[in-house]
Length: 565
Image 1 (cartoon, rainbow, N blue to C red):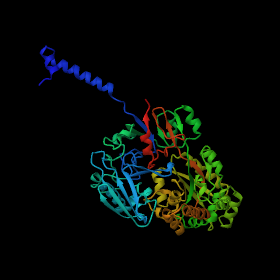
Image 2 (tube, one colour):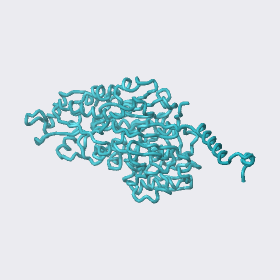
Image 3 (tube, rainbow, N blue to C red):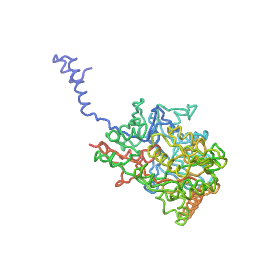
Image 4 (cartoon, helix red, strand yellow):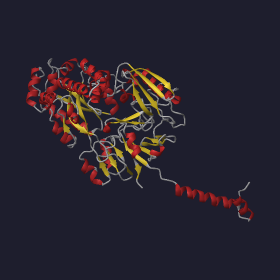
């Protein structure tokens, strides 16, 4: 039946098809007038040689917007706000009085992006993956969790193998995936998850090719009113040179990469090109304590050799040339960040400072004592047996500050007669070589937390010397006392006890010169205010501003951004 307007107009002899055409044209015009241009935030969290439809949060090859943006965590602990919890999929947590158990209350009313309800079953299932397949347990969950128990649809309980007052910080790093989708997966490591279902703010992959991809809004996001960005765009960026050539054009909104002379090569191009460089961890040179050559391995195990190498390096020169002055020489022989100086015993710092200070003559003397000498007159030192001492130094391809640092190190060590060849590898092969112990020397940076514990734990806990873990402890140095102290810190009942533990860890690692700390770098963070506002900054330090993969606070950051009107 025709509506009153249609009926009246039609009865007056107005051609119906023409009328319908006019009305639909008007409706279409109204839609166009009211339509909002989607706000697209262009992010560069890391470099990729190849873009693939891999959004598996358990995979080391997943795309850099997988964690947090597709798979929302239970809690984000804000490291700039004294580890204050920002509750996400969980609304609270409670530790047992003996610190051997922890329960999480989950948020009700959350839906997966396909409309299914999020419950404790999903959390239970996700942790069962890590328990059943230890190679996917990249955060060391299994060393703490004895079993997981679903207590209700919105409460999950973890029984711990040993007390840990800080275990929540570790547990919330495990990605939570939907059981109804993943229960049919046969190989969790190889599953690419090209059509992800998540609880995070951006779950819909709208375009993906060899040049990048676009990831748009979750239609069922539980906090949709707080999300003002419609889509994330990840353009493939292969290395630091590629990044630097493009950031000055204004293509990117949110990035976190090294820019030499950042004022000249970035900030000077536009008042909208901003940056903030908070202090962060050290860059260290690692020795492989499991080096393939047994004689090289024996030399690496001598602390005198490691100290000789340390004293051959001019740290300020490394900063001035490789980091364009963006950094501070390491003074703690343990590699602890300078920002934790209040945790260090000044007597210990002073005791080992000579080994962190350039002294090529003393370095040469120590090598002579070790019988690592030039036995054939060719200008290079040989091993005690007379075999050539020729070392390689691995760095990730495209990390220009690391690559330049490695080149400078090779020149500095040449001055004491040690031949070092820098080798650049794509990031995944770089990590694989480290995890397999297939290298001599390598450069790495380290994650940081609100206390020095995260550094010491990730860098020197022997538990993390298996292939499923990140690269940080793959020097393969082991010390039972260090492992014991690392288990004591989470259950220490007082600040004084925690201070004593860190000071002993600092003393042990410094006395052993396990690695050669080079310099304290900064957190690389650039933001473009042309299109968006609400950025975290030095004057607005709400949380860590990093866009790097698995930097949990980036979820808080993206929700703070709004398109400029």
